[in-house]
Length: 421
Image 1 (cartoon, rainbow, N blue to C red):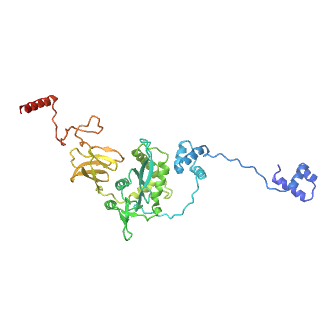
Image 2: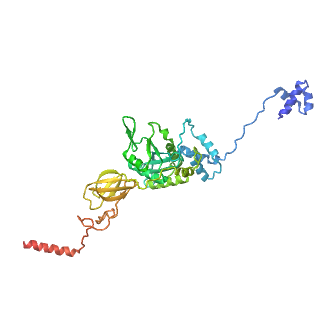
Image 3: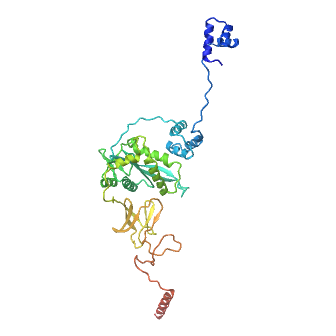
């Protein structure tokens, strides 16, 4: 095949009027070759297809495709850690380019970012998850994720719980403040019923009374986002998606305690140790700088209570939040008053405190406090009992133990007395 320069020489000589034989003599080419290129003229060169080069991500493509088909919301950072554990030595760009090929394209929406000063604002909310614990694999449970994120540093606190109720909201606020070792000035909420009751005639937001007491005790101002404007609290919505994609999907959990233990490790090692894409700062380092701007914790713990009335079962138990708590054997009232604090449960009979229990985190659990069961348990009972009391005996009384011969003698004496009458 002739090079482009040789072809141009042939055509130029032909335009000068030289014959094919003369051109062949000058160029040293065969006359048939000269004639062919004169007839063809100047054409663009034709190149063959370029062979594709092997990609460093190629050995891991079947694994990635299987993971995306089964769990399409998995994050790129999560998948990068997984394939690096399998031996991948490349960078993140090769992975994200491939994920862009196999994932559907979503049209971006333009948003206005709102940043807050250190210690100024936090955002809090609940998110709904479903999980089958390995302790009970046949039962699909609903669990709720409570999360609070500091607006300036994006430092994240999160815990799973079984109830999206007022007591859980209060308890997890207290845990978040203790974890932060401080309190932000404002906390932004979605219009969840545990935080916002409604609006008055003038359109002012009415907050739950217990939440207001909590806010007064810790010195923060609750704020509700506008209706149907969830993006006004985007700093908390994005962490929910991040937790679902990067932590929750594709894992197994033994029970609620194991779920929270794994979540705590992930928060420490991954979420709060990462370089945040928006702030371009390491989250934990930004939090250490923001901590000084947080309000100090109050000296006294929050002791506001949620008051309930509960009936005592025949087993001497009170049901609260799906769990059972014991009352002492000496309890005579069939209805008692239960005060639920942030971390404790107090039971009162006629305004007298008779039992104190720590809050049980799960469901269908039973706690019998030490000293509440003085009577001996039935032969086949599984309930823990301590001490020994006879039927009708009161707590603290000792029942005399006598041999059977004593009762036989008493019976014979009673029989003689009856015969004498």
